[in-house]
Length: 126
Length: 390
Image (cartoon, rainbow over the protein chains, first blue to last red):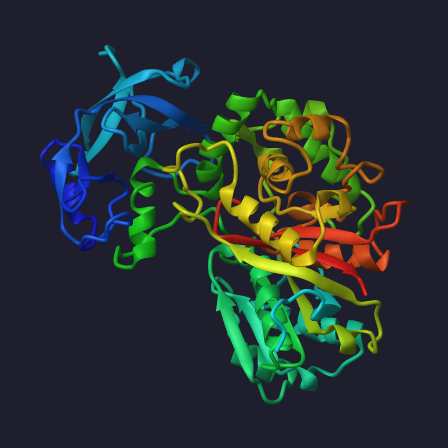
């Protein structure tokens, strides 16, 4: 963790998906960075995303298989309804069922060591 | 003082080691060997080298290389970041140094035990402290650890939007493999690739399969840049640098520029294209052959659009017409490229660009090759250049 990203992971630890917001011009930005590229303000806070969005793009990772991950691994790029994008994992979905434009919802996945990771599932799925 | 790099510098020598999966020697040894070879090619002594440029990813520092090859005084040395995005950038550095008198004989090199030593696909890890490592931290917890995973996200969106098929990617892989069949240095030498083999190969990061990926190679390549004027007096026909640029565009990330409006084009390549066409006064119709960066097949089709050889979404038609083949509109990676010759991080594509200008490729097109386009890594801060006859 560094000074520019630790807050996001702390929000995840509190079961929240964070989005950085510029306090100068209220622009949302992700991934976070210390200065607003539009108004150059260094002041920012974070809003909690609704967790709802749609699949902008995806890939299914099959090889090489690294320890600690379950394959095939469905990775999604999600257009959040707030307007920013986030890269994450789609869980509980067979690779053949993922598609562009599908609605998704965020949930928090807890690793055995307690580390929490915001991931997504298809909207309305269990 | 020149106000443009147009025609100021030329590539006077190229040097390559053998390519293998296990070189059995150090990367510094590979670097020294390819640099000596480039000097021999040009007919100069390594003692005349006064500038060195490499990649930040290269393990052989300039001064170690200089000692190894017996260079004397160096007045210019620099390193370029962003993996394969550095390839043409090293030439841009060298050309600027030559044009401004910082150095006279600049060697750009990349030496890597890319298979037996540090492999590119082994994931990113380490203490999170630099901006670069924080960047990767948005991807690695989810399992996006290898370049193919990062590129697949863009390739999938692009293919979905424009109806590009796996067969189209296969056509790129097979075209380059066919070139490699004639190149004894190439990994693909003597190993034909059929569409059936392609379609049945292992899926790695959908939509990309095994044959969409470049090789992992032990080897090295050096490019000697000097003034266009001096190059004309050396041993080889010069490949004059008509234009060269680096390019990174708004919203650029390293491999994961996912947060721009659309993922169906390569804005940094479009920037590179505009700059080299403006600088050279040339356009897509003037380009006779290309060595487009090809870590992955999908990148070739997208670049055909970036560099204006066709409109958006039309790259697939050029590929289906056989444009990339040796007798096509734009023979591409006639040595086999990173996919079928070997992966020296794009430097070997520059060497092939020079061979095409010298009429010295193992797959030399029958038509006259006046101008060759060479590009750097795709999906990263990149660059491009046009080489011409001198």
